[in-house]
Length: 554
Image (cartoon, rainbow, N blue to C red; front, top):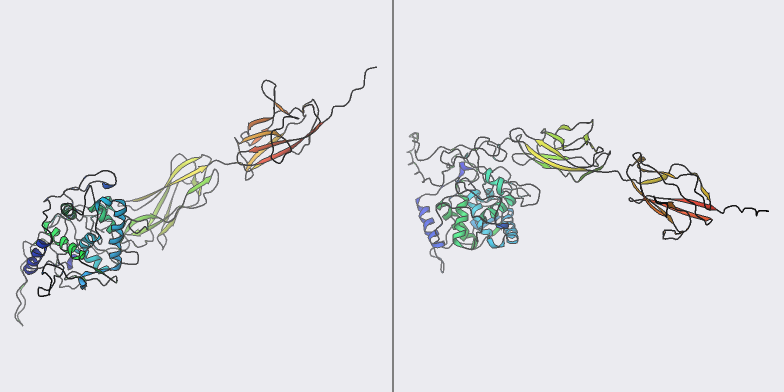
């Protein structure tokens, strides 16, 4: 389907006759009258089969211009072979690059399809005149929307709105959108991100070309086979005339193309300049209306009688730049925080209008959902923020509660058809970074006795006690690589046996009091090492003094 349907032209009988001759020479294949989207499995099956009664374009109108043919008198040339190197063989640089990029990607992900980029070029030619002669920006997005007529059943298919006007600015009926003229419902299934910007935009030639390639490759099609290629083209528009036109350009482009600067491509007849005298479009099944006879000079032109065979058309609406179209992530990374702390980043989103431009003053509501006690500033679970001039809005600061685990935060914008983004956030437990004694009492005992004092320690994270911290207590040697000491002080187990390593856990306040320590029988200075799983350590010196000598009995 073409760009501006007020500028679409269907050629007359002479051109149609040439077209028939050209197509007869190009292909003898007969496509099925009612093409079906092939089923498939694995990578060959897209996200849903295309229904047989809904083509990618909604069977909308298209440009019927045919490629130029070689001069009959040119030596060694056939009248049925197109001339390469002509202006018509020029394809705008970004558009050509998009077709070739799509072919390359399909060759890597669906090699069995054998998609030729020239087929995309042929469809792009008849649908939009190669994005209106390559009028795209540096990212491949059309400089202005390419919209088809309303699919209101008046000469076209009847397809009621499926996207809330997000893509086509029409909340009543769908329209074909972009350089490859996808209707919104088809784009919802087949849309692709061909230029890697994180968006699936039917107005972007890279996105649209890749989507068209995947659509044509649906099921188990092998486009090197004429029957499969015909079936694929007919799934785009259920018209044998459409198939012949696409086939003509396909063969023409296979014989040679060249790159031209963006914006300088040759437009289909009647499409340039937006002249008020440009012919009105006709659906693919409409025969051309004869041109009125010229009126003699000085005689007023009679009011033309409407041709009853030509259905009325509805011009595409003037796009409104303030209509919300999409919501996207504006660079929000991983959302993670320690219990009780503020998340180190805020959720940021970006709003665009229906043409993909940044849009200000869009109300975005952020909501904390799930089993969590995390809250926005002020203890709120929801917050509404308007997008700034650059289209971005950031949620208020989010603070983790004491409950650990994952939860969700949603960002919602739009009323007719809300757009929702969902972010996952996670809260991790505090991990002690410090292990200290609560007093500095020297630990001294007499050999054979118990130490009178009990060691008490606390585990903290940024000064706050951490409950449930695992602490390992080990009597160690003085070696540089500490090992358990089998001499000197020891703990006792439930059976009263000596043990020199214990696994302990701090209480609710992060405090831990060690069990009684026995001095042992050998005097000397010993060390007790306390460690946590996070790497915090504490060494306590234990001094054992020799027992006093007893006087001999008289």
